[in-house]
Amino acid sequence: MFWGGINITFINLPFGGEWYFGYLAIPLTIVWIVAITNAINLIDGLDGLAAGVSTIALLTIMGMAFVMGDPLVIMITAVLAAATLGFLPYNFYPAKIFMGDTGALFLGFVIAILSLMGFKNVTFISLIVPVLILGVPIFDTILAIIRRIVHRTPIAMADKSHLHHSLMKLGFTHRQTVILIYAISALFSLFALIFTMSTFWGSFLLILVLLVIVEFFVEVLGLVSQNYRPIMRLLRLERIEREEEQE
Image (tube, rainbow, N blue to C red; front, side, top):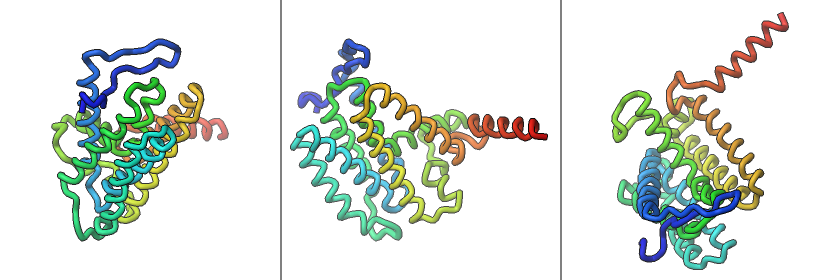
């Protein structure tokens, strides 16, 4: 893998210059691959969820590979996307067959590799593109780690506070939850596509808006903690102050 050039060797900084990772290139690449592999596995908590989210990510990577003229990535993503699409009708709720850890880890590993193949030596801005494409599993994994640190539980310990669990607690059905997460994943992919066509400041603004949206969802769904709601508290305080002024 590394001898094939699939690693992040350097990035071009937005205001000039390059940042070479040197000996850190391989460790950083390993961290990325392990993280994405496990992130896809972690979201495989509902029927059809991992397969659908992976398909959306694969189709997005394939589209970008087509724009960049990378036939190898196009071919691999097309084959894998076709396989997951063929599998999805049998895996969607109520599932007749399951991919299990083996299938989810395989999907995660291949997606991690494919996301690097088109972004090996990239700018600081375009480095964010694969993160956006895989936004749902990445953010869900990061929030799971933060949540377990906050609650002082082992990071490897499973819980029922992942994105799909939180949506179902709000009253969404199994099917509705999966479809909603598909939509969120597609939205992340759309952001990634827009991101690649934006200027530096446009990209910066886009990321800022996206982070605010993510933060709002985190607070509403209680993905970190039910007590962690800084923006909602701020909005509530402003509303109270406004009401007091009117009185």
